[in-house]
Image (cartoon, rainbow, N blue to C red; front, side):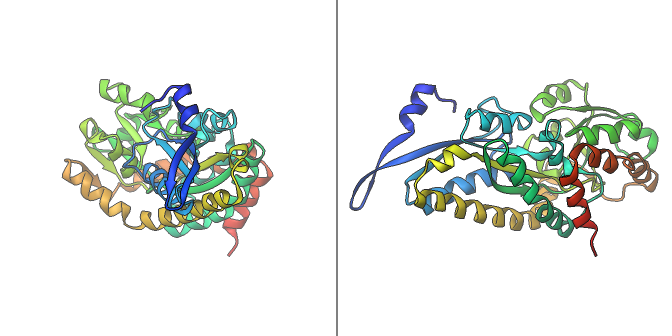
Length: 328
């Protein structure tokens, strides 16, 4: 629920009661454009609960979901820097439009397994921290998404079917890949995509089972092709001034909560695919796990230059991430 600035100001200091007296509790705002049931949404809720418990109720997170504050992932770094919110969760691929480095987890077929996604996240984390620090922020934690596939109205069983897609993609790289494969592709947020999906203007979506389930894509797109395009991440970030304004105990609570949330999110992903598929099948989705080789080849051929293009845009930090990934 949105609250007026005056209400938020009053809520910034809440009188809470401990067993031995009263203390001032600091309330911090945090938002994501994703539903509370999604992986990022669960991460925000987990973090909020942990901050409350680890701070003894001295720090409270006022969390909002589904872009309730009007902030989409692509605008999150700027919004947190401007202190429109104290903290936010954002899909890294959307951030890549302005900050290319964040596109590394979405590079096609680079991390197509959980073990590779873990290794990539470990390699990329110092660069994420460096970039966020340059914008007055602190990286809290990352959240992995299940592997991206293609939600569609009709079965994607041939190159011709691939070329017939009008598909929503989630970053500039995936838009480029799908266009090179012959599809019509639009790099837009889920919030912007949903009306177009409902109208039929968009007949496919590149997303995970998790992302699509959170938006009930089965109401319009009843098929899912398991192409294992990438296992991207979302990042949670906090305004550094808001963090530094806290006392030492509260900062320690934030740090501990962030570390535990990241560990729980990467543990949670292990069974998420099976949960997603069960939920999708329950809602009438046909899951195509054996995508024809010509379709896979067309996508991989279309993606061939994407990594090189990303390297050029991301600069030395991006190249160092890939070098670390390529070490035996």
